[in-house]
Image (cartoon, rainbow, N blue to C red; front, side, top):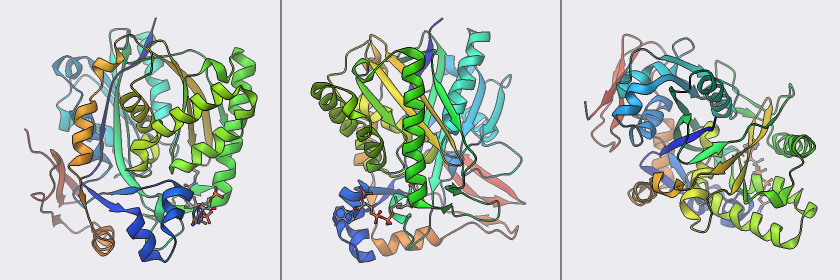
Length: 390
Ligand code: COA
């Protein structure tokens, strides 16, 4: 049975910071951020967006009535969840009006969460071929003002419907996973900002890639020439390139050029959004599919997922004949064009505006937020979400 990505949606908040201006304000050369890190714009979440609303907004653009009926499993990958007990998936399930006879859970392993969710979805569809699974990867990446990770922040979500006979991409059977208990990036339960050993995390990301790629080749006999493109988890767009470069000499110049060209295309959306943790790999896939007009159906795409702490995985997908007809390219173009730039001082003020942590209630003004689904406040310890269309 063919199982894979039937639909893919995306949402990012309406605010962004220009990385050139952030660099000037931080006293570094703009090229460090735009070339050295590889980021042009950084999405900024207003206080009225959290990982739940971002995911719900991403899913909203792809679901129709049939999906709402058939989805019986919602799996939410995140590392910026809003509750230590109740899953973010249950909130999204309610906000989208899905069939009540569904299972809704949250999964966590840093940026790897959505990949774990996809593999769980594959298993579920194999057992229940008529089902559909909603997979969500949604996060707000916060390292803090004036930190070395600041230029690699961002916010956004990707939503995917996984089903049999998918219309966009079939996920192939073979994959290789790797786990090693390391401290390269983590966020203790008492902290709203991540701790990171940046250089170590870069090294481990590359090492994990090399190990899973080597094991994958041995397992399948496939080589770089068998891939049209490889999409990477992208904490920043230079990161995947560093990993790709370490294996390019395995292949011919033609294949190298193809992989490097497609790498650039696959990083365009991420370059303008920043790190969205769990959704980053899938945003890169979306960028490739929507911006490369020369991809042929049947093309094989490699996917490298990495979640600090750490788990890595290399897996693959093959494009379906009419995949292009099932993308929302125009809507995403409008989403990017409709965003509003904020100054660095406005960004700093918005970044520091946080929800109360002492249990008090708060009412938020959602009139300035163009998103359909917003966080309207906290009342008696409970988040108040609003779907403006319902
Ligand atoms: N023009 C062009 N490139 C420049 C430059 C300039 N003027 N100034 C610096 N650079 C380059 C550096 O050479 C370096 O490139 P390289 O990594 O290819 O050598 C790059 O910009 C970053 O510079 P660096 O000094 O290493 O940056 P940093 O110490 O501020 O930290 C990170 C960068 C990524 C480590 C930091 O942002 C971080 O910790 N991020 C979060 C962790 C993360 O994303 N981990 C990834 C794995 S999940």
